[in-house]
Length: 505
Picture 1 (cartoon, rainbow, N blue to C red):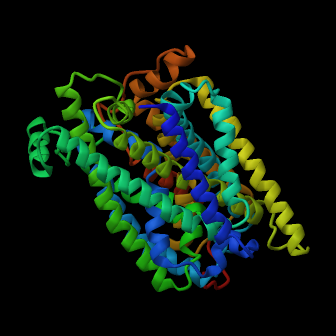
Picture 2: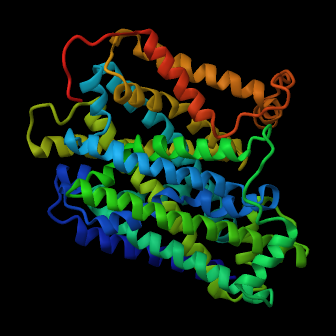
Picture 3: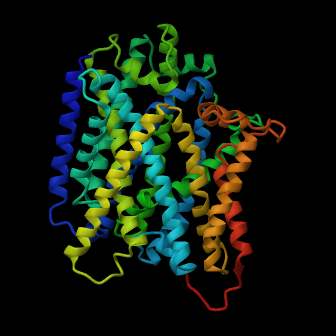
Protein backbone atom coordinates (compact mmCIF):
# COMPACT_ATOMS: atom_id res chain seq x y z
CA UNK A 1 0.00 0.00 0.00
CA UNK A 2 1.20 3.50 -0.80
CA UNK A 3 3.13 5.04 2.12
CA UNK A 4 1.86 8.48 1.05
CA UNK A 5 -1.75 7.38 1.57
CA UNK A 6 -0.91 5.93 5.00
CA UNK A 7 1.03 9.08 5.89
CA UNK A 8 -1.95 11.28 5.01
CA UNK A 9 -4.16 9.31 7.40
CA UNK A 10 -1.58 9.67 10.18
CA UNK A 11 -1.58 13.46 9.68
CA UNK A 12 -5.38 13.54 9.53
CA UNK A 13 -5.56 11.61 12.79
CA UNK A 14 -3.32 14.14 14.52
CA UNK A 15 -5.40 17.04 13.21
CA UNK A 16 -8.45 15.42 14.77
CA UNK A 17 -6.64 15.03 18.13
CA UNK A 18 -5.52 18.67 18.05
CA UNK A 19 -9.07 19.77 17.36
CA UNK A 20 -10.36 17.82 20.35
CA UNK A 21 -7.55 19.25 22.49
CA UNK A 22 -8.38 22.80 21.43
CA UNK A 23 -11.98 22.58 22.61
CA UNK A 24 -11.29 20.62 25.82
CA UNK A 25 -8.33 22.67 27.07
CA UNK A 26 -9.94 26.12 26.94
CA UNK A 27 -9.93 27.74 30.37
CA UNK A 28 -7.79 24.95 31.88
CA UNK A 29 -5.68 25.57 34.99
CA UNK A 30 -3.31 23.41 37.04
CA UNK A 31 -6.24 21.70 38.76
CA UNK A 32 -7.68 20.73 35.38
CA UNK A 33 -4.26 19.52 34.18
CA UNK A 34 -3.59 17.33 37.23
CA UNK A 35 -7.04 15.87 38.05
CA UNK A 36 -9.55 17.32 35.57
CA UNK A 37 -11.17 19.51 38.26
CA UNK A 38 -12.53 16.25 39.76
CA UNK A 39 -15.43 16.47 37.35
CA UNK A 40 -14.66 13.79 34.74
CA UNK A 41 -17.38 11.55 33.32
CA UNK A 42 -16.79 8.01 34.65
CA UNK A 43 -18.06 6.39 31.43
CA UNK A 44 -15.48 8.27 29.34
CA UNK A 45 -12.72 7.50 31.86
CA UNK A 46 -13.57 3.77 31.84
CA UNK A 47 -13.65 3.57 28.04
CA UNK A 48 -10.51 5.68 27.58
CA UNK A 49 -8.55 3.57 30.08
CA UNK A 50 -8.84 0.62 27.68
CA UNK A 51 -6.61 2.46 25.24
CA UNK A 52 -4.17 3.41 28.00
CA UNK A 53 -3.80 -0.16 29.29
CA UNK A 54 -3.54 -1.70 25.81
CA UNK A 55 -0.46 -0.05 24.35
CA UNK A 56 1.13 -0.57 20.95
CA UNK A 57 3.11 -3.41 22.53
CA UNK A 58 -0.14 -5.22 23.32
CA UNK A 59 -1.39 -4.52 19.83
CA UNK A 60 1.44 -6.37 18.11
CA UNK A 61 2.96 -8.59 20.83
CA UNK A 62 -0.14 -10.28 22.30
CA UNK A 63 -1.27 -11.63 18.89
CA UNK A 64 2.35 -12.53 18.12
CA UNK A 65 2.67 -14.56 21.34
CA UNK A 66 -0.08 -17.04 20.35
CA UNK A 67 2.27 -19.03 18.12
CA UNK A 68 4.50 -20.04 21.03
CA UNK A 69 2.29 -19.54 24.09
CA UNK A 70 -1.24 -20.31 22.85
CA UNK A 71 -3.85 -18.36 24.88
CA UNK A 72 -1.80 -18.57 28.09
CA UNK A 73 -1.78 -14.76 28.28
CA UNK A 74 -5.45 -14.92 29.24
CA UNK A 75 -4.41 -16.42 32.59
CA UNK A 76 -2.86 -13.04 33.38
CA UNK A 77 -6.09 -11.33 32.33
CA UNK A 78 -8.03 -13.50 34.82
CA UNK A 79 -5.59 -12.29 37.48
CA UNK A 80 -6.32 -8.71 36.41
CA UNK A 81 -9.97 -9.26 37.35
CA UNK A 82 -9.05 -9.99 40.97
CA UNK A 83 -6.55 -7.14 41.10
CA UNK A 84 -9.00 -4.57 39.77
CA UNK A 85 -11.53 -5.58 42.43
CA UNK A 86 -8.89 -4.81 45.08
CA UNK A 87 -8.30 -1.43 43.43
CA UNK A 88 -12.01 -0.61 43.30
CA UNK A 89 -12.88 -1.55 46.87
CA UNK A 90 -9.63 -0.97 48.80
CA UNK A 91 -7.47 1.65 47.08
CA UNK A 92 -10.09 3.94 45.52
CA UNK A 93 -11.86 4.60 48.87
CA UNK A 94 -8.48 5.36 50.46
CA UNK A 95 -7.54 7.88 47.77
CA UNK A 96 -10.89 9.66 47.95
CA UNK A 97 -10.89 9.70 51.75
CA UNK A 98 -7.55 11.52 51.71
CA UNK A 99 -8.56 13.79 48.78
CA UNK A 100 -5.28 13.06 46.96
CA UNK A 101 -3.99 14.70 43.81
CA UNK A 102 -0.93 12.46 43.71
CA UNK A 103 -1.46 9.00 45.18
CA UNK A 104 2.11 9.00 46.53
CA UNK A 105 1.14 11.75 48.97
CA UNK A 106 -0.38 8.89 50.98
CA UNK A 107 3.12 7.52 51.62
CA UNK A 108 4.29 10.83 53.10
CA UNK A 109 1.28 11.08 55.40
CA UNK A 110 1.76 7.48 56.47
CA UNK A 111 5.57 7.19 56.70
CA UNK A 112 7.32 10.48 55.89
CA UNK A 113 8.98 12.36 53.07
CA UNK A 114 11.45 9.62 52.07
CA UNK A 115 8.65 7.11 51.49
CA UNK A 116 6.82 9.71 49.41
CA UNK A 117 9.85 10.41 47.23
CA UNK A 118 10.78 6.73 46.94
CA UNK A 119 7.30 5.91 45.66
CA UNK A 120 7.41 8.77 43.16
CA UNK A 121 10.94 7.84 42.04
CA UNK A 122 10.08 4.22 41.24
CA UNK A 123 6.95 5.29 39.37
CA UNK A 124 8.94 7.83 37.32
CA UNK A 125 11.69 5.31 36.58
CA UNK A 126 9.30 2.58 35.49
CA UNK A 127 7.01 4.84 33.48
CA UNK A 128 9.83 6.61 31.62
CA UNK A 129 11.49 3.38 30.54
CA UNK A 130 8.28 1.48 29.85
CA UNK A 131 6.52 4.24 27.91
CA UNK A 132 9.54 5.05 25.76
CA UNK A 133 10.03 1.36 24.94
CA UNK A 134 6.43 1.15 23.74
CA UNK A 135 6.89 4.37 21.79
CA UNK A 136 10.03 2.98 20.15
CA UNK A 137 8.28 -0.22 19.07
CA UNK A 138 5.42 1.58 17.32
CA UNK A 139 7.63 4.25 15.75
CA UNK A 140 9.79 1.42 14.39
CA UNK A 141 6.75 -0.11 12.68
CA UNK A 142 5.67 3.26 11.27
CA UNK A 143 9.26 3.87 10.16
CA UNK A 144 9.46 0.55 8.27
CA UNK A 145 6.11 0.78 6.49
CA UNK A 146 5.72 4.55 5.98
CA UNK A 147 8.47 7.02 6.85
CA UNK A 148 11.51 5.10 5.62
CA UNK A 149 9.86 4.75 2.21
CA UNK A 150 9.32 8.52 2.18
CA UNK A 151 13.02 9.01 3.09
CA UNK A 152 12.14 10.62 6.43
CA UNK A 153 14.87 9.84 9.03
CA UNK A 154 13.91 7.98 12.21
CA UNK A 155 15.09 10.89 14.38
CA UNK A 156 12.77 13.33 12.57
CA UNK A 157 9.83 10.92 12.85
CA UNK A 158 10.38 10.60 16.60
CA UNK A 159 10.78 14.35 17.09
CA UNK A 160 7.63 15.24 15.14
CA UNK A 161 5.47 12.62 16.91
CA UNK A 162 6.57 13.84 20.34
CA UNK A 163 5.97 17.48 19.38
CA UNK A 164 2.46 16.62 18.20
CA UNK A 165 1.76 14.81 21.48
CA UNK A 166 2.99 17.88 23.35
CA UNK A 167 0.68 20.12 21.35
CA UNK A 168 -2.47 18.35 22.49
CA UNK A 169 -1.44 17.65 26.11
CA UNK A 170 0.57 20.61 27.42
CA UNK A 171 -2.45 22.81 28.15
CA UNK A 172 -5.38 20.58 29.11
CA UNK A 173 -3.59 17.63 30.73
CA UNK A 174 -5.95 15.04 32.21
CA UNK A 175 -8.99 17.07 31.20
CA UNK A 176 -7.98 16.75 27.52
CA UNK A 177 -6.56 13.23 27.70
CA UNK A 178 -9.84 11.74 28.95
CA UNK A 179 -11.47 12.85 25.68
CA UNK A 180 -8.55 12.00 23.37
CA UNK A 181 -8.20 8.58 25.01
CA UNK A 182 -11.88 7.94 24.31
CA UNK A 183 -11.36 8.83 20.67
CA UNK A 184 -8.22 6.72 20.44
CA UNK A 185 -9.78 3.71 22.16
CA UNK A 186 -12.60 3.87 19.60
CA UNK A 187 -10.05 3.86 16.77
CA UNK A 188 -8.12 0.97 18.26
CA UNK A 189 -11.17 -1.24 18.88
CA UNK A 190 -12.66 -0.45 15.48
CA UNK A 191 -9.39 -1.41 13.79
CA UNK A 192 -9.11 -4.60 15.85
CA UNK A 193 -12.65 -5.81 15.06
CA UNK A 194 -12.50 -4.94 11.36
CA UNK A 195 -9.10 -6.62 10.94
CA UNK A 196 -10.50 -9.80 12.53
CA UNK A 197 -13.54 -9.77 10.24
CA UNK A 198 -11.50 -9.16 7.07
CA UNK A 199 -8.87 -11.82 7.80
CA UNK A 200 -11.47 -14.42 8.85
CA UNK A 201 -13.36 -13.71 5.62
CA UNK A 202 -10.16 -14.05 3.58
CA UNK A 203 -9.70 -17.53 5.07
CA UNK A 204 -13.15 -18.54 3.83
CA UNK A 205 -14.62 -19.24 7.25
CA UNK A 206 -16.48 -17.52 10.09
CA UNK A 207 -15.77 -16.76 13.77
CA UNK A 208 -16.75 -20.23 15.03
CA UNK A 209 -14.98 -21.96 12.14
CA UNK A 210 -11.76 -20.02 12.83
CA UNK A 211 -12.03 -20.91 16.52
CA UNK A 212 -12.35 -24.60 15.60
CA UNK A 213 -9.26 -24.40 13.37
CA UNK A 214 -7.32 -22.72 16.21
CA UNK A 215 -8.48 -25.42 18.59
CA UNK A 216 -7.12 -28.11 16.25
CA UNK A 217 -3.74 -26.38 16.30
CA UNK A 218 -3.85 -26.11 20.12
CA UNK A 219 -3.79 -22.30 20.05
CA UNK A 220 -6.91 -21.93 22.23
CA UNK A 221 -5.37 -23.67 25.25
CA UNK A 222 -5.71 -21.19 28.13
CA UNK A 223 -4.42 -23.01 31.22
CA UNK A 224 -0.84 -24.27 31.50
CA UNK A 225 -0.61 -26.99 34.18
CA UNK A 226 3.20 -27.38 34.08
CA UNK A 227 4.22 -26.24 37.58
CA UNK A 228 7.82 -25.51 36.57
CA UNK A 229 6.89 -23.36 33.56
CA UNK A 230 6.98 -19.59 33.81
CA UNK A 231 3.44 -19.58 32.37
CA UNK A 232 1.97 -22.02 34.94
CA UNK A 233 -1.60 -20.90 35.50
CA UNK A 234 -1.26 -20.05 39.22
CA UNK A 235 1.86 -17.98 38.52
CA UNK A 236 0.07 -16.07 35.79
CA UNK A 237 -3.15 -15.52 37.75
CA UNK A 238 -1.35 -14.44 40.93
CA UNK A 239 1.15 -12.42 38.92
CA UNK A 240 -1.65 -10.79 36.91
CA UNK A 241 -3.46 -9.86 40.11
CA UNK A 242 -0.46 -8.05 41.57
CA UNK A 243 0.51 -6.55 38.21
CA UNK A 244 -2.96 -4.97 38.06
CA UNK A 245 -2.73 -3.71 41.64
CA UNK A 246 0.76 -2.27 41.19
CA UNK A 247 0.65 -1.05 37.58
CA UNK A 248 -2.86 0.39 37.78
CA UNK A 249 -3.81 0.91 41.43
CA UNK A 250 -0.37 2.20 42.47
CA UNK A 251 0.32 3.98 39.19
CA UNK A 252 -0.17 7.75 39.12
CA UNK A 253 -1.01 7.74 35.40
CA UNK A 254 -3.93 5.33 35.76
CA UNK A 255 -5.17 6.61 39.11
CA UNK A 256 -4.87 10.25 38.04
CA UNK A 257 -7.82 9.64 35.72
CA UNK A 258 -9.81 7.64 38.27
CA UNK A 259 -9.57 10.25 41.02
CA UNK A 260 -10.64 12.91 38.52
CA UNK A 261 -14.15 11.38 38.71
CA UNK A 262 -16.50 13.26 41.06
CA UNK A 263 -17.54 10.45 43.49
CA UNK A 264 -16.15 7.19 44.87
CA UNK A 265 -19.12 5.24 43.56
CA UNK A 266 -18.63 6.50 40.01
CA UNK A 267 -14.89 5.76 40.20
CA UNK A 268 -15.64 2.20 41.32
CA UNK A 269 -18.14 1.78 38.48
CA UNK A 270 -15.43 3.06 36.17
CA UNK A 271 -12.93 0.41 37.33
CA UNK A 272 -15.34 -2.54 37.12
CA UNK A 273 -16.72 -1.47 33.71
CA UNK A 274 -13.18 -1.04 32.42
CA UNK A 275 -12.31 -4.53 33.73
CA UNK A 276 -15.25 -6.21 31.99
CA UNK A 277 -14.44 -4.58 28.64
CA UNK A 278 -10.73 -5.29 29.05
CA UNK A 279 -11.36 -9.03 29.42
CA UNK A 280 -13.35 -9.11 26.17
CA UNK A 281 -10.80 -7.01 24.29
CA UNK A 282 -7.85 -9.15 25.41
CA UNK A 283 -9.68 -12.27 24.18
CA UNK A 284 -10.15 -10.58 20.81
CA UNK A 285 -6.42 -9.84 20.61
CA UNK A 286 -5.65 -13.51 21.27
CA UNK A 287 -8.28 -14.59 18.73
CA UNK A 288 -6.64 -12.23 16.23
CA UNK A 289 -3.28 -13.85 16.95
CA UNK A 290 -4.74 -17.28 16.25
CA UNK A 291 -6.16 -16.35 12.86
CA UNK A 292 -2.96 -14.48 11.94
CA UNK A 293 -0.95 -17.67 12.51
CA UNK A 294 -3.51 -19.75 10.59
CA UNK A 295 -3.36 -17.30 7.69
CA UNK A 296 0.46 -17.18 7.81
CA UNK A 297 0.67 -20.98 7.75
CA UNK A 298 -1.64 -21.20 4.74
CA UNK A 299 0.26 -18.52 2.82
CA UNK A 300 3.83 -19.52 3.83
CA UNK A 301 4.51 -16.28 5.70
CA UNK A 302 7.44 -16.52 8.11
CA UNK A 303 8.31 -13.40 10.11
CA UNK A 304 9.20 -12.59 13.74
CA UNK A 305 6.15 -12.62 16.08
CA UNK A 306 6.02 -8.83 16.54
CA UNK A 307 6.06 -8.31 12.76
CA UNK A 308 3.28 -10.79 11.99
CA UNK A 309 0.29 -8.45 12.31
CA UNK A 310 1.76 -5.47 10.39
CA UNK A 311 3.18 -7.75 7.67
CA UNK A 312 -0.20 -9.35 6.95
CA UNK A 313 -2.32 -6.20 7.44
CA UNK A 314 -0.15 -4.13 5.08
CA UNK A 315 0.41 -6.85 2.49
CA UNK A 316 -0.85 -6.62 -1.10
CA UNK A 317 -3.28 -9.48 -0.42
CA UNK A 318 -5.72 -7.09 1.25
CA UNK A 319 -7.33 -3.90 0.07
CA UNK A 320 -6.08 -0.56 1.34
CA UNK A 321 -8.86 -0.38 3.92
CA UNK A 322 -7.34 -2.92 6.32
CA UNK A 323 -3.93 -1.28 6.03
CA UNK A 324 -5.37 2.13 6.88
CA UNK A 325 -7.35 0.69 9.79
CA UNK A 326 -4.25 -1.09 11.07
CA UNK A 327 -2.22 2.12 11.08
CA UNK A 328 -5.03 4.09 12.76
CA UNK A 329 -5.55 1.32 15.31
CA UNK A 330 -1.80 1.09 15.97
CA UNK A 331 -1.33 4.79 16.64
CA UNK A 332 -4.60 4.76 18.61
CA UNK A 333 -3.07 2.08 20.83
CA UNK A 334 0.22 3.97 21.09
CA UNK A 335 -0.75 7.51 22.00
CA UNK A 336 -2.96 6.88 25.07
CA UNK A 337 0.04 5.19 26.71
CA UNK A 338 2.46 7.99 25.75
CA UNK A 339 0.36 11.12 26.24
CA UNK A 340 -0.90 9.83 29.59
CA UNK A 341 2.63 8.91 30.62
CA UNK A 342 4.06 12.37 29.92
CA UNK A 343 1.12 14.03 31.70
CA UNK A 344 1.29 11.78 34.76
CA UNK A 345 5.07 12.12 34.97
CA UNK A 346 4.67 15.89 34.88
CA UNK A 347 2.07 15.74 37.66
CA UNK A 348 4.15 13.35 39.75
CA UNK A 349 7.36 15.38 39.44
CA UNK A 350 5.63 18.71 40.11
CA UNK A 351 3.67 17.49 43.13
CA UNK A 352 5.84 14.73 44.62
CA UNK A 353 9.35 15.98 43.89
CA UNK A 354 9.02 19.76 43.56
CA UNK A 355 6.08 20.10 45.95
CA UNK A 356 4.44 22.69 43.70
CA UNK A 357 1.13 22.41 45.55
CA UNK A 358 2.79 23.34 48.86
CA UNK A 359 4.76 26.33 47.62
CA UNK A 360 3.67 29.93 47.58
CA UNK A 361 3.31 31.57 44.21
CA UNK A 362 0.77 32.64 41.64
CA UNK A 363 -1.12 30.28 39.37
CA UNK A 364 0.86 31.69 36.45
CA UNK A 365 4.22 30.90 38.11
CA UNK A 366 3.13 27.34 38.93
CA UNK A 367 1.90 26.86 35.37
CA UNK A 368 5.28 28.01 34.04
CA UNK A 369 7.02 25.43 36.23
CA UNK A 370 4.62 22.71 35.09
CA UNK A 371 5.23 23.53 31.41
CA UNK A 372 9.01 23.36 31.89
CA UNK A 373 8.68 19.92 33.50
CA UNK A 374 6.31 18.78 30.74
CA UNK A 375 8.72 19.76 27.98
CA UNK A 376 11.66 18.24 29.87
CA UNK A 377 9.96 14.84 30.04
CA UNK A 378 9.23 15.05 26.32
CA UNK A 379 12.96 15.60 25.77
CA UNK A 380 13.76 12.60 28.00
CA UNK A 381 11.35 10.48 25.93
CA UNK A 382 13.09 11.61 22.74
CA UNK A 383 16.53 10.64 24.07
CA UNK A 384 15.30 7.25 25.36
CA UNK A 385 13.69 6.33 22.02
CA UNK A 386 16.96 7.10 20.25
CA UNK A 387 18.75 4.92 22.81
CA UNK A 388 16.44 1.99 22.03
CA UNK A 389 17.06 2.62 18.35
CA UNK A 390 20.81 2.41 18.96
CA UNK A 391 20.34 -0.92 20.72
CA UNK A 392 18.24 -1.89 17.69
CA UNK A 393 16.55 -4.94 19.15
CA UNK A 394 12.76 -5.25 19.42
CA UNK A 395 13.26 -8.01 21.96
CA UNK A 396 14.28 -5.28 24.39
CA UNK A 397 10.52 -5.01 24.98
CA UNK A 398 10.66 -8.33 26.87
CA UNK A 399 13.27 -6.82 29.15
CA UNK A 400 11.11 -3.74 29.76
CA UNK A 401 8.17 -5.86 30.89
CA UNK A 402 10.43 -7.63 33.37
CA UNK A 403 11.88 -4.26 34.36
CA UNK A 404 8.37 -3.18 35.39
CA UNK A 405 8.18 -6.18 37.72
CA UNK A 406 11.34 -4.94 39.40
CA UNK A 407 10.45 -1.25 39.70
CA UNK A 408 6.84 -1.67 40.85
CA UNK A 409 7.82 -4.09 43.64
CA UNK A 410 8.83 -1.34 46.10
CA UNK A 411 5.54 0.46 45.45
CA UNK A 412 3.62 -2.74 46.16
CA UNK A 413 5.60 -3.27 49.38
CA UNK A 414 5.25 0.33 50.60
CA UNK A 415 1.51 0.60 50.03
CA UNK A 416 0.70 -2.87 51.37
CA UNK A 417 2.78 -2.20 54.52
CA UNK A 418 0.98 1.09 55.04
CA UNK A 419 -2.50 -0.43 54.57
CA UNK A 420 -2.00 -3.77 56.35
CA UNK A 421 -0.02 -2.59 59.39
CA UNK A 422 -0.15 0.23 61.93
CA UNK A 423 3.63 0.37 62.35
CA UNK A 424 5.84 3.39 61.61
CA UNK A 425 9.18 3.29 59.77
CA UNK A 426 12.70 4.55 60.29
CA UNK A 427 12.49 7.21 57.57
CA UNK A 428 16.25 7.23 56.97
CA UNK A 429 16.35 3.52 55.99
CA UNK A 430 13.40 3.45 53.58
CA UNK A 431 15.58 4.09 50.52
CA UNK A 432 17.94 1.29 51.55
CA UNK A 433 15.10 -1.25 51.69
CA UNK A 434 13.58 -0.03 48.41
CA UNK A 435 16.90 -0.48 46.61
CA UNK A 436 18.01 -3.79 48.15
CA UNK A 437 14.64 -5.57 47.69
CA UNK A 438 14.54 -5.16 43.87
CA UNK A 439 18.19 -6.22 43.62
CA UNK A 440 17.43 -9.43 45.54
CA UNK A 441 14.38 -10.10 43.36
CA UNK A 442 16.42 -9.51 40.21
CA UNK A 443 19.15 -11.88 41.44
CA UNK A 444 16.61 -14.64 42.08
CA UNK A 445 15.08 -14.12 38.66
CA UNK A 446 18.48 -14.35 36.96
CA UNK A 447 19.19 -17.65 38.72
CA UNK A 448 15.74 -18.91 37.79
CA UNK A 449 15.90 -17.86 34.12
CA UNK A 450 19.58 -17.98 33.11
CA UNK A 451 18.83 -18.68 29.44
CA UNK A 452 16.56 -15.64 29.21
CA UNK A 453 19.20 -13.28 30.54
CA UNK A 454 21.94 -14.79 28.40
CA UNK A 455 19.78 -14.28 25.30
CA UNK A 456 18.79 -10.71 26.16
CA UNK A 457 21.92 -9.36 27.82
CA UNK A 458 24.94 -11.61 27.98
CA UNK A 459 25.20 -12.48 24.31
CA UNK A 460 24.54 -8.89 23.20
CA UNK A 461 26.95 -7.40 25.74
CA UNK A 462 29.57 -10.12 25.41
CA UNK A 463 29.34 -11.14 29.08
CA UNK A 464 30.13 -14.56 30.46
CA UNK A 465 27.18 -17.00 30.69
CA UNK A 466 25.66 -17.34 34.14
CA UNK A 467 25.11 -20.63 35.97
CA UNK A 468 22.50 -23.23 35.11
CA UNK A 469 19.05 -23.00 36.68
CA UNK A 470 19.52 -23.89 40.36
CA UNK A 471 15.80 -24.30 41.11
CA UNK A 472 15.48 -27.69 39.38
CA UNK A 473 13.71 -26.28 36.36
CA UNK A 474 11.39 -23.87 38.20
CA UNK A 475 11.23 -20.54 36.41
CA UNK A 476 10.01 -17.33 37.95
CA UNK A 477 7.28 -15.78 35.79
CA UNK A 478 4.91 -12.92 36.43
CA UNK A 479 5.03 -13.61 40.15
CA UNK A 480 8.32 -11.66 40.14
CA UNK A 481 6.47 -8.49 41.15
CA UNK A 482 4.95 -10.32 44.13
CA UNK A 483 8.34 -11.69 45.22
CA UNK A 484 9.77 -8.18 44.95
CA UNK A 485 6.87 -6.75 46.95
CA UNK A 486 7.33 -9.39 49.68
CA UNK A 487 11.06 -8.61 49.94
CA UNK A 488 10.19 -4.92 50.32
CA UNK A 489 7.50 -5.66 52.91
CA UNK A 490 9.88 -7.81 54.99
CA UNK A 491 12.59 -5.16 54.76
CA UNK A 492 10.17 -2.48 55.92
CA UNK A 493 9.08 -4.73 58.78
CA UNK A 494 12.71 -4.97 59.91
CA UNK A 495 13.08 -1.17 60.06
CA UNK A 496 9.67 -0.57 61.63
CA UNK A 497 8.50 0.08 65.15
CA UNK A 498 5.14 0.02 66.86
CA UNK A 499 3.15 3.17 66.23
CA UNK A 500 2.40 5.00 69.48
CA UNK A 501 0.07 7.67 68.19
CA UNK A 502 -3.31 7.00 66.64
CA UNK A 503 -3.75 7.38 62.93
CA UNK A 504 -6.84 7.24 60.75
CA UNK A 505 -4.93 6.59 57.55
